[in-house]
Length: 334
Image 1 (tube, one colour):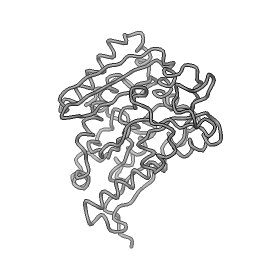
Image 2 (image 1 turned 180 degrees about the vertical axis):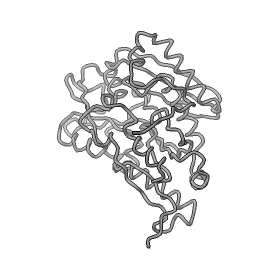
Image 3 (image 1 turned 90 degrees about the vertical axis):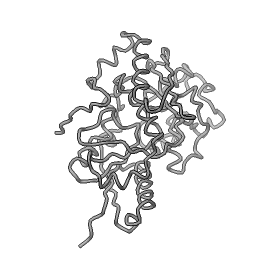
Image 4 (image 1 turned 180 degrees about the horizontal axis):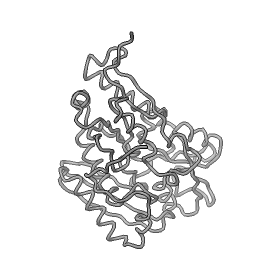
């Protein structure tokens, strides 16, 4: 009989998700010789609702949890020992009984501009002519694109990286935006026309970070993964996620946030925009990295004050009820 793998990794099936899961598998093998053996670590591909419903904007069908719910269930049921996530797809609450404290060292968090063949000479969104069409499924990118250039038309543009690049090659849009980290992990960074400066396009909360979710109290699996965890990444991402949680940011609101630890100080910048990009509220903060969650949460509270209740009314009318960042809601799955 075939021996059971020592570890089973749950992952989505997109090429990027598989590249990330294989990266974790490779690191596990480097850290633990017994995991380098053939068959010691298995990948289990789990299809999620977010991968199936590519015809509809994410914000219309329930937001981020659509990429993680089936993975949560597989983990809690014991079908897999860990799940590998793009942290920007993970809701700010986690199902009880799971923990997500291990993150790999973060890659470059910026977005890139990718122009279609006929627009290769246009290296900035600001230089696009009136009526040019930019494809993006992200509310955060859409609002910031409109803020940079109100004359362009932005259309919903979903699918994995390869699907979007195919649509671009077919001439469906004049250009699109993707995360540089994802392109690098796929070996596709050469398709980028230009890297967009962070001052123009603040990245998504947790962009460029890979997280490993395990069952709470599973010391065996934690023993395997702890050698690959990056504390700086975890603190930066927890700061950003606390900011998002304070704004109830799984909803239909363009929110961006970025934390970085430089010389022992955590620097955070956050922004909330109106979908048309005409209104925006920014906040900056810095402090001791150990206070990451506090800094992020405070920045969220500051944005609430700056934006005022009328602007944020849309936030409150979202499907998700407000939860504290470090008190995960008890989720029951059907």
